[in-house]
Length: 303
Image 1 (cartoon, one colour):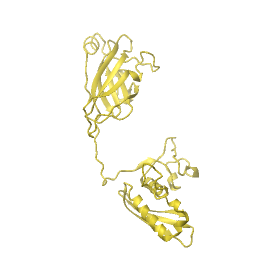
Image 2 (cartoon, one colour):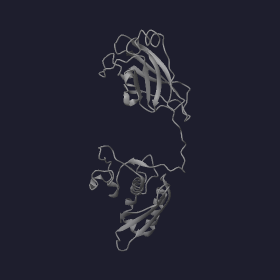
Image 3 (cartoon, rainbow, N blue to C red):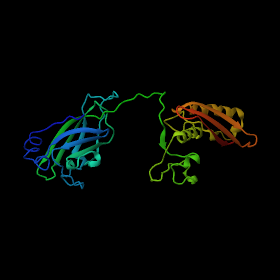
Image 4 (cartoon, rainbow, N blue to C red):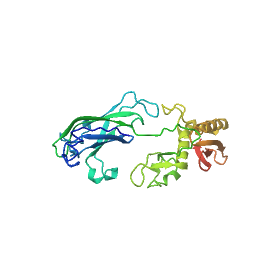
């Protein structure tokens, strides 16, 4: 919800009215500022802005001609003080951005380097040395205050099932079939892969859950400095996996680790020592997700 302002020369009879030609000419003035996305403020001017994109002296695309300052004492719905922002980029929005064809050039979108503190936090947006397209007038300096974008703050709930989605990092052959373009390439295993469009691929649902379970099993405890209790490190047990007591202890650790995943309601890990394959131990994982059907799969390790 923006605060707008006006001036007699830019918005009144001299600039925007009969003398200025209704936006086609006349003195330029900053009319309003509104937050349209969590990191974008839209500035409206009375006439089109001089804009070349080559950063000449009067070019309106120079980011340093714009500034965003916090209004001290204001807070957001999350209870945090208003967050400082810096201008990272500016551009002229077009029809696809919701601007009418006849108004293109009168609006400038100022993009911040991070999301703003949510409503009702306030920001002062300043522009300076902004010239009209005909270079006959300029805004020496103008500041308007805008309310931050409204963003509903939902407290997290452990009872709420949140769909999982992450960068694809296939751990099994089955995980490489969709949406990866080369499902039979073994070099895809354990890597960050791309999809058919050339962008990073994503996995979700059962594939994502299995990946995270396998990652907990193979990651050595303490391997992540910021997660000192993450991981079981099954491969590090080596030949000790042939001992039933050790296998039972590892299975108990695996249950505790997998149970920490936010979308896991219940889990059971059963170690299976097959006398026909004495050099192999399988951990049978039975998982009941918070949403969806129960899953069962085996994770084999060499002893």
